[in-house]
Structures are given as structure tokens and as C-alpha cells.
Length: 114
Length: 110
Image 1 (cartoon, each protein chain N blue to C red):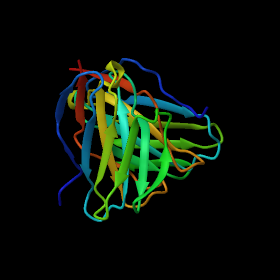
Image 2 (cartoon, chains in turn cyan, blue):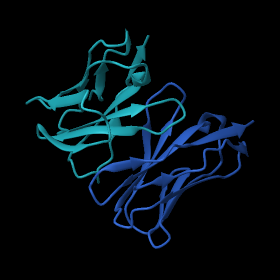
Image 3 (cartoon, rainbow over the protein chains, first blue to last red):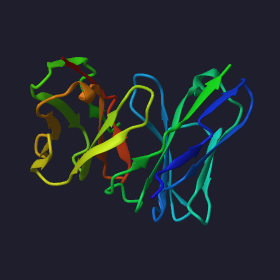
Image 4 (cartoon, rainbow over the protein chains, first blue to last red):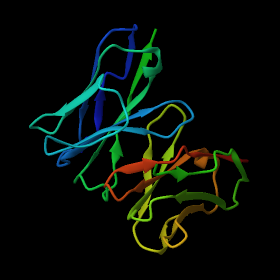
């Protein structure tokens, strides 16, 4: 079975631009979570979606938004990019949205802002 | 502010020895605990989950949980150079969200 897939793998943008990152969960998983990871730090929670509804939101500005589609895939959108948005963006899926099931990660999207 | 604390390391352990990694958490309502391994430039991969007090063993790995002390640990027996990585502790808090530690960098010396 395919694992969590993310696209693109790498992305270079300039300040002020907009970016859309995509994630397909493991087949049968209904929950998708998005994380930002900066070098030397643990993943920072951005959003969780379960059954197409937002279940949780981390401490990120409104420039960050996300949605989940009927097939449980998800998009993370970031507007008005800042240099500080440069990071590895991770998507993780789990079977349920309670946080008790292990999350399985995709390979991530490395976003560089120039 | 709910927190998960880990010693950043690096923790250096000789090949074949036992590596001991520790994690403390602040939310007493936490119920589920996870250890992930992350190689440089890669995404985290699940090693173990633990939900009840006591020890849980899986191959060379043993997770230990003590909810009264708000402490979870990971032991790696017969450490191998391939175990060199950053180990992340994640805790499901009372709001059903995963809180992550910053990770401990482990170096296994041949």
C-alpha cells in the first residue's frame, strides 16, 4: 500500500508569493495533520482535519489555511510568504482524529523563501 | 502552555551499548505517547507507541511510561551505528492534539 504522499518535494518562492502544498493520506486514513519543522526543532502543529472538518489549529497566522477533500486528500495554503516560512512542511495521516492512533508522515515539502 | 521536554543532546553511546532517551511532559491529562526517529533531511518515522504505565518491548526497543511522574523513556539495546538519528517524543494532550518535543540527537560510535 502506498504511504502518505506529498507534493511537491521542493519549492522555491519569493517573499509575498502564495504557495499550495498537497497531501494524499494512506488509504483508509481519514485524518490529516500538517506540521512545520524548522531545523533543530520538533514539528510544530499547524492544522488537523478529520472527515473534511477542521479538528484543530496551531498557533499560526491567518496566512495559513488548509482544507480536506472528499477523498481525504488535503491542501495547505500559505499567503504573503515571509522569509520565516522557510521550513520542511510535513503531512501526517492517521485512521482517526483523536490523536491516539500513530501518525504516519509523508516525505515532506521543503519550502525555501528567497 | 503544554510542553514536552527532551534533552537536545547529542547523546553519544558506544556501539553495542544501551541508549537511554528521556522525555517529560506537562499535561497530566495526556493519554497516548509516541517515539519517532528522524534521520537528517528525512521525515519522522514511528518507532513505538505506549498507552499504559510500565514497559513495552519491540525488538531492540523498549518504551517505558510513568504517568505519575509524567515521564516516558525509550531504551535501545545493542545500539548500532544505523540508530544514529534524532529521536522525537510526541504526547497526545487532553485536547486530543499531539505535542512534540524538540528531539534528542543520538550518536552511536563504532
